[in-house]
Image (cartoon, rainbow, N blue to C red; front, side):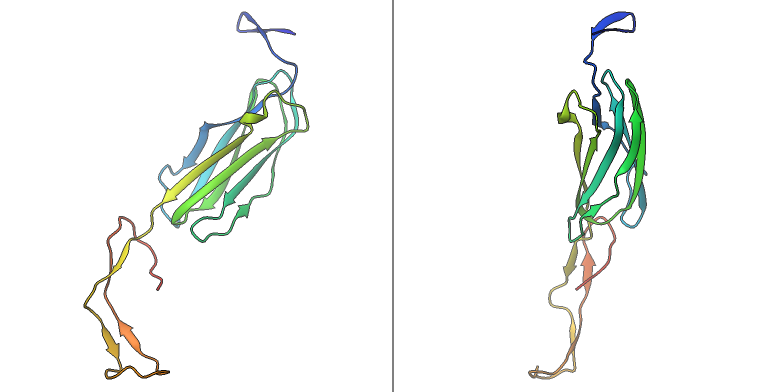
Length: 169
């Protein structure tokens, strides 16, 4: 089929062509800190010659740094017309550590290229770098450490990292 495009003739297959591009992923705020809520916005394009029917976006946050895997409910995109895009967004409360987002778009229509239907994006939010100062601390009660006796210990901990964070021992 011959389809006019901006005064030129271009051959387009008469099937949809959904795609996800990293350049179309936006995060607001651009540098979120742990504990803040970040909004992710993504444009999904249909570059094919036909409408992509009953399209959906699946978003998964792969568990990292002790976090569980979060499988967000599929986002219903409806029918995506040829030559257009759909914008979607979701939120996440930022956590310390390394995290991997996996996004995939699908349609019930046959497509041009399935290779551009998935996007994997990694996020790294460094946590605090805690260090116990050696040679400091007090053990109570003082005296010999006897088996089965609970003791309390006070130590000094320093954060040598660039961000604040919780202390867990």
